Length: 206
Image (tube, rainbow, N blue to C red; front, side):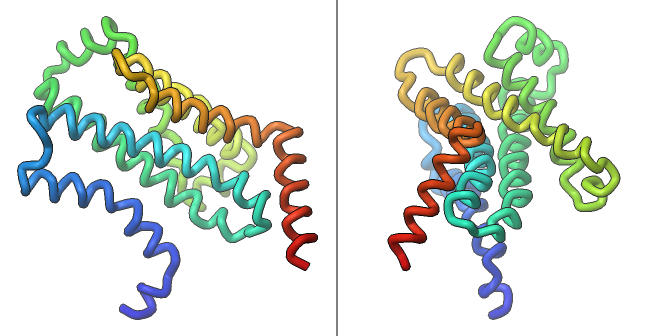
């Protein structure tokens, strides 16, 4: 047990599970509000986006801090984002549409934000399936090309949220701004900016 507590990955996993534990606690205490289905749907969708953005932040943080070991957490973070995406999708299919295929298809076709969200979820599936080391070895260079879909998925997630919200756009626009920053930091000038910031920090430290 003590060895488990000293494992950083165990603490990261626990942190990733906190939103689910909070939802369960609110469910038992009657704290899900007047519309529990909407609350669960919104919460799981929000944490899916948070998970995607945190996963995308690993590479910029590694370049900024020089901590190559941060890459070890990227797959776990991505899988937790997929986990919350599955909860989001199941909530919609089960609690909102009651497993009615015809109603789901109509919703996907007629409502653009559902179309975009469904597309993002479908694109997440091959990333989750190929997240193992064995699949990385089998796919080789194609693995990295496939997993670049996370940029498209994150963008679709932001659009899904933006089109869902009818009045206060603050939250989806905040997610969009963070995504734009994380993508910009992958461009050559963004990489150079991170490297320069790291160099200044190292010089100041020593």
